[in-house]
Length: 351
Image (cartoon, rainbow, N blue to C red; front, side):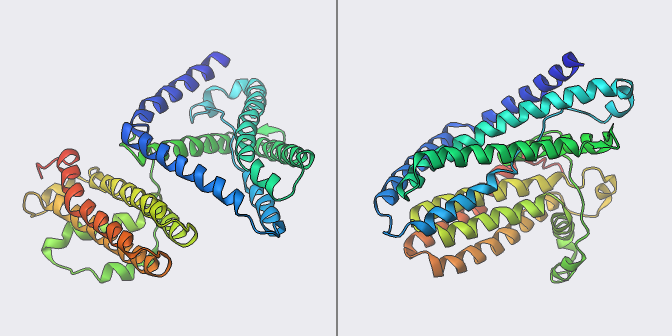
């Protein structure tokens, strides 16, 4: 049992290491180093310019850090066939899950403690003494232990292992990790769900119903009903909006929103293969290159709406309008220059 699970763990880690090359490339690492350095400088200046009454900051921070407690999941590396082939070894699997729950708790407790340590200077600056901070970290650790015990208990039903739930949780954990890598490169093994979202049908009705827009309709329908891509696009847009509203430094906002817009375009390129499973699309009386043109129109339409939203909110919250114009120009350049270049490399132009 241990050898089997260790082999699966090693296989998944090898897969993650392979994809991490595309995440930790030279440009991204350079950007992150500059960004982290800038945040460190701003953090230092913020500590020096705290208001006289820091009680609101202290309590807001202590309450906000409670959000760290539920973060984390138990890595079991269970797979669908295990419900049949490992059923006779259920007791051994239970002991294995118990051990994995402890290891996962230790890992996520260390991550949580590291994040808390980053805020220790701010907590000290707000008047909280060292003993209280240590007690606070330990209390959050105990709370995380209780959360992981609850997560482990959910794997069981009437004393027996709930194979369906345990396998589904592990699959969701792996999918979450793979979707992160999918922000930067094409990842194998990602499964997409479909959601009807009938309330968005009215938007599809606004698109011109012409022969040349066949692929535009198909791709837009696929985008709006994609359970993961649509929600991920909304999350990235929400992060951009929150950054524009709450980050006071215009340069940081522009850099962050520019990165998020790039990630949106990269994700939308995955729509190209959405209908590869449907061979009847080969019978469409469409010109060569119409599929590529349809995807291009779809991405331009989505990015156009995102740009309008970001621009409108930016007019209110970004003081430096020149930087805002620079962001809009950057997004337009992504659409008009980067998008065709990327599609030429990723898209098979035989259709």
